[in-house]
Image 1 (tube, rainbow, N blue to C red):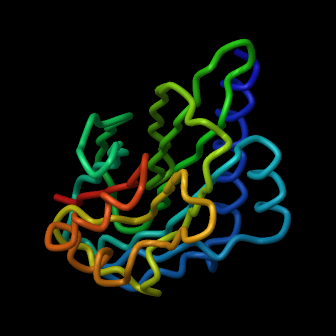
Image 2 (tube, rainbow, N blue to C red):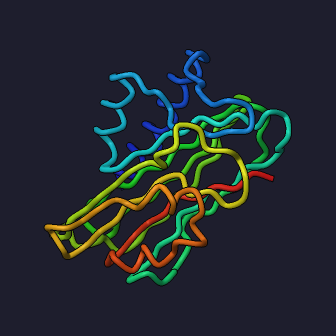
Length: 199
């Protein structure tokens, strides 16, 4: 349980640090982009989580609600959704997603999501059976510098495969039109997609 508390504290600390420097908001109106973290923020995140993704969004006054969730696929098939959270947003904000591979004393991985906007942070946590750490892993954020807010976007992925030699990241086409390229997920044993939708 210590790991759960540490991750929660770190997520709140990152939001606070980023809030102190509003110039870090890198997203254009109506877009999401990977946050430009300082070395200090990267160090803090890496000390508490095995995988971390942080995004800035700019709702541009058009969108009033943000949803964030994780989809789990096994051999290309959707097997579940983890940590769906939804909250009101106002203009700019931050989305945070972290994974800790093993909760102390268990064989579970901890997934944490957070949405920060207008001085308020909404978080969600959930656990999943840990993936065999002997598998090859590829993690990445959406390769587009600026992601237009539309539909159910894929912001990041963590892909696991038994094939150690030929493990590749998902294509740019997948991130731009995921529903047209779902066959790519069959190349992996387990894959987690971080998704978001604004309304």
